[in-house]
Image (tube, rainbow over all chains, first blue to last red; front, side, top):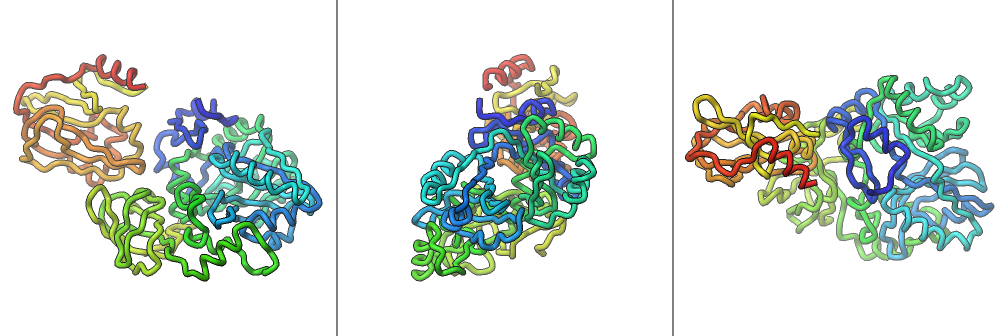
Length: 361
Length: 128
């Protein structure tokens, strides 16, 4: 038996197929993951993301703590509620985890990290915390729901007390805000608009059921994976890990070297890698032949071999798509070894799909 | 609890077998198998005339999650593959024992070693 979120009984009651995910018993689908995927792209779906770890970090030097801890720069967070997506690196420039950090006050930041890496992340952060005198509190009293899709925000706002409704709908992309006992953020992992709601664990099931009644479809990890891959969003453990650096994982945009005085953990290693010349690059692939691209398949290019890091069948495009790490000199087309056959794939510009629209021709 | 029609025979590898009036057999994968695979996106069915031995892989079913071989429960010659699955692989998910049939076969010998519905159910329970 794995760890269970406050929504476990609800998932089972709704007929979910449960699987182990990083030590947690989670729903992979409630019937058809393809239908759940389409519901998010066209309307609204709800995901249980309570297995992820919410950590409140407090202290007068909290901003300095994050300035050191993560590769992106919290100096970008000037307005309360603003969120930042970043990697947390080790001294070799390898990725310990990817995360989202929210600036709430000059003595309180909130960070959300992945479920499978929570223990490792907490230990790492606790190792650096004393230098800055900050206190870390793991918020195990909270659950987290992701409500995503073009109609998601409206459905959530309709449930809020009148005094919070306007504030919720006024939230800009990548901003969060406390609304009563809830923390609502306009963030997500699907490429659609929506909210992620952090709320007291005891309320989660009631809120989920109410949203179902208002037409929001229960959606599991299967749909979550096809949605995030269509949006070309990385999955820790697949697309990057401690042995990969962000620059060769499509995450250079999340690393800020701008402030020369900011000696974040891993900076020097990344600078050495850049001077030596990066050997790999991260690309988005569209399979031209019939089949499904999957993680670890070998990619054959004119410049040598690469590897698929994440692959799937895109329900929106009805084609197979993937992210891959390949030699720097790779051109516009590659072949992929799919169960012993070399199939043709094209390098395309990510993302594949955003806001319900296919962006790749 | 997956659906296991009493009037069919089964294999440990989750195929089902229906004997047709003309003595041919119809073969597909069970409700348990389609649920485990998830939404199917591609199905490769065999061509008419193909000779098969019991245990040969005669089709591949591919879902978002994984690709899986489908094995011949009996040897014989393929009479037809269900070509509707080319454009509608999801028929296997929605009607695994009906419109989701995968191939029809003229058996080369009498079927042997197939499980009854009760035996297949026990096999599923043991598999955990």
